[in-house]
Amino acid sequence: MKIDQDVSWMRDAYPATHWEKAGNGSSMVVCNLSPRHCKIADGQMGRCGVRGNIGGELYTFNYGKSVEATMEYIETEAVNHFRPGAKILSLGNIGCMMSCDFCQNWRTSQVRHLDQADVRRYTPEQIVATCEMLGIEVISWTYNDPVVWHEFVVETSRLAQSAGIVTLYKSAFYIESGAVDELIDCIDIFSISLKSMDEKFYRKFTGGTHLQPVLDMIRKVHASGRHLELSQLLITGRNDTEEEIAKTNTWVLEHVGDRVPLHYVAFHPAYLYTSVTRTPEAIVLKAREMAMEVGIRYVYCGNMFRDGVSDTHCPGCGTRTVRRYGLKAEAVALDEAGCCTQCGTPNDVRQALKGRAAEIALPTSPDTHYSRDFLWNAEANSVHIEVMHDAQTVCALQLERIGTDAVPVQSFATGGVLRRIIASRQTDEETGVRVTLPKGAVLHFYPVLDRAHFPTSENLEREIAGYREERTDAMARA
Image (cartoon, rainbow, N blue to C red; front, top):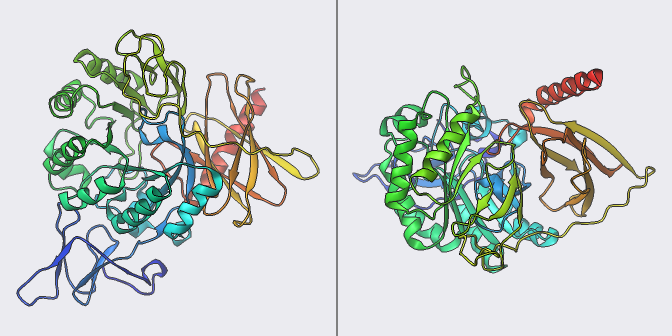
């Protein structure tokens, strides 16, 4: 792929780190950020599509370039043992060091499919200021994969930590050791996706070259003492057999122990792998059962909206210490140290009672506000709510649940770089959400197909049409 100055997001570049000259008087450079070690000719991009060679020097073209910043919950990132229920500011880049044929976010990870309308530009200072303005205490580097966003992630994370903001890194971790050393210095939480224990899987389906570098870097993070959680997407017909699951369980026990939380996550068909069904719930539940049977203490089911599959139970007395449903979490029997209030056993939950951002009251006069509904359906039990308004001011909105009064009305705020928040189903009875906001603000709904999915503007109209059709059918049935 050539560097094309006519493409607006390629018009400015930032000096890259972790590279060397190819030698022999050549203008080629070698990128040492990932185990692929791309050799890149002058005027060309590496396999990631966002790091390129200009005059024998390596530059990154995605510094500060992000998809829409979104307020989500820490459980969105397969993190259950750090500040349960905490609100986070999620940020995702463009480009990726991998090219998975089942990618949930291929419209932005594979830059040949990128729509410029999905690219936002942020500075580290804007991101930190937004968190401080809205009381959000965790920044998450997520979605595509933050590895090829390295320079921006490191610089912003250092600034965030100096302001007392926690940093979270959600990644497939196809990355080299030197870069991991820098991350360990400025990242508080690592949520790593182990795609398979099969070397052939990585080569055939992900665009990676080897599995071992991923395993080595997981062990490096674990040895550092930083908070670590692991997840594995169970992909229909690919890595969802009991044999594959057993391999993962065995490796986790042998190399990081029984106390690192493990998440088995349901897959939805995406990108080039759409000829299959979603992962049957029975397979995800079986994976959880198998992991617990061999002695892994904390095992969770992801992308499942049902009771009992993602609760934390005390390993000492069995008390449910954290109750979860989908992305909603509540510490119900933990003290500030993360110990069970019934028997005192440590539950390996860090900062158990911290990190809940304050809500902002919203006047609900019908003369100044309006409401719109989004109904849950078979494909989407979560939605990004995007609010367009004056970014210099805080815009408050109210969220109420349709079909149940078991969940209190909630209030949220957007402002600064934040225009999106996530809402997800919190009870079996709930049928949707009603959003109330000032008349001067413009509202869009972006259906979320699973917790790793970032919905883009390119498919907005199709997705909105789908939920409107679902809503029409539901009202007709009523």
